[in-house]
Amino acid sequence: MKIVIYGATEIGCLLATEFFEDHDITIIDKEENRTDEFNQLDISFIQGNASDISVLKCADIQNSDIFIACTAIDEANIVACLSAKRVGQVKTICFISKEEYKNTLNFERSDSSGDFFIDYIIWPEELLTQEIFRIVTVAHALDVENFADGRARLLEYKLQPNLSIVNKKVKDCGFTSGTLIVGITRDGELFIPNGDTILLKDDKLIFMGTSHSLDILAGTFFHEKECVKSVAIIGGGTVGLMLAKSLEALKIKTKIIEKDYERCQCLCEQLNSTLVINGDGTNLKLLDEEEIGATDVVIGVTNNDERNLLCSLLAKQLGVKRVIARVAKVLNIPLFEKVGIDIAISPKNSAINEVRNDLAENDVDILATVEQGQGEVLEINVLPEFDRKRIMDLRFPEHAIIGVIQRKNQVIIPQGLTEIHTDDILIIFTKASCANAIKDFFKVK
Image 1 (cartoon, rainbow, N blue to C red):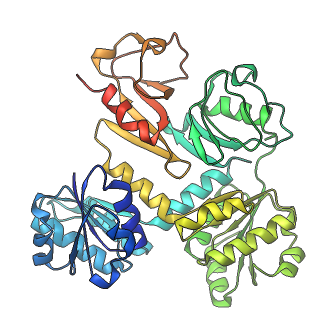
Image 2: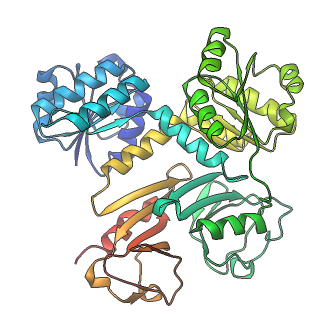
């Protein structure tokens, strides 16, 4: 595909790095915003403003497939997308940072009778909030993804040294029926396990299965006897507010620590049962007085990486078992995890995943990515050529595991003898580097 990206921002660089090997990428922005990272990629760079139709034509927008506007200015992104739509039949993806713009653009799209609308609106903070909320609501999980309208899930757990399955082979663990272990991350590298794979402490285990079976698995092997009952959020910005609203809906005891007094007043007006504390989340004395150590989960979501890291480390020192930290700079994620933060998560990564999903082919959808994009969950429709084939007889060109089969209203966790049928939907886990080979395998020859 031919993709035009407006904005030499960090997101623009991440998008270009993600897609330049398989697609023709053109970046539009001012020359002073062009960094060394862009110079290392095989891409085109055009100086100018994408709101200018002559600049868009210079980027060959008429023959492009996708236009992505990801500058730091919402208004510039919106105007550029609408301009691109007017010049060509290109699909548009617009990054915004304000809820009111998202609501307005979605309304305009649903109300539009012509082609003058934006196809995809991406609000990274909203995606980040949704991802954190999924993780918080499953105790001890590092990652949570829902499939098949919530009837199937992906869960990721870190293997603590005291667990009974440490140093056991996968086939000897006796994992719950209705679940499959589909991936393991060890020393930062993801791989697909088999029955003889030995589980080691600090491994990150990725499971897929029915929601009910995974609940049993968690309670049996990962000590999830209780649900999350209390959450402390440090940072009362947009993400903190949206998280608190979602947690209130589940009746989870929630408190927010926010440094700005006027923002605290705003939070109090919009929240019902959440305790709002005006204070500095990096103040150890304050955290101790507020009994943060007794909280099930602490989430650092200020707009500053250093503050999030510090308050998260202080929470750990006070005895909090699970700490989640927002990371603005994607390159900081490994550092956060290395010093002991349980889950470091970036709105930019959430946004990249959304774009990746938007660019997926119609018949092969990427449902989720894990471990910083190392693993992918694919959704594939079964063609007649594969009707009645057994799982054990499918000779994949690369390592992959069929984790879930959706058959009409049924959700099936397959075994080797399970047959797949025409029009089944397969949810497949594989490494990102193997994904294209798996997609090609299921296409008509």
